[in-house]
Amino acid sequence: MSDVAQLAKLIKQASAITVLTGAGVSTASGIPDFRSSSGMWTEDRSREYYMSTRYFSRDPIDFWRRYKDIFHIKLMQNYKPNLVHTFIKDLEKDKRVYVVTQNVDGLHQAAGSSSVIEYHGSLHTATCPVCGTKMSSAQILEEETPRCHNESCQTIVRPDIVLFGDPISKHSEAEHVINSSDLVLTLGTSLQVSPFNMLPEYAAYERGLPTALLNGEPTMMDSLFSLQLRGDLSETVLSLKKELSE
Image (cartoon, rainbow, N blue to C red):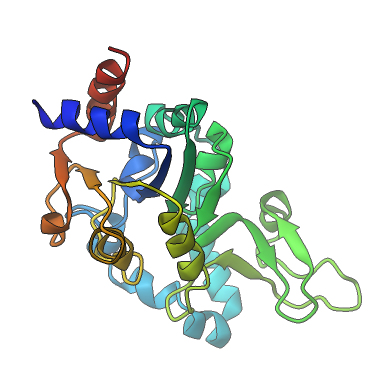
């Protein structure tokens, strides 16, 4: 039995699935990845410095200039869910599906997934660090340096993504949905970022669940997974959809 057929069998048998996703899920939508061998963070390590809590505190005006430059394609929202997003959504037809994503692009929600944990936050909003007023992405784009729209405040707002140096607040929530699942799929991530990369290990070793990795490149954590399907993610998903329909 092929790896695709084995995975299709596991999916059919599962009543609840947790899907862990990374930047590779969104590349077919035109959004560049971050941590692959040719990803944008690999090309320019200085982005990690500028996209940090420390730099935001030091120079929030320049931070916002760089933030809008780095995430320009996402902030302009000129991208749509691709067949990988819709495949994950379609799994909900006959089972519970929990998505835990490193991505900040909102494409799982745009595809219609009903349970999405945004592990690293969202590009679509920003929050005033003083009064808590929320701003939408449209409002963020209105000003070069977005400030709180509360007239009595006017503080420079902070984007609702997890910056370098920020604590992760969603890890326990992610473990909770893994506890409620009987299969964990990991798609399109190099598993270089901690503590997100601890989630497959938790699923495999702490919970004893079957796990599968669908990714374009090898990772340092491949040995964790019951199944490894390597190659173009869109092509892998098409093969998997065909197998599931039989």
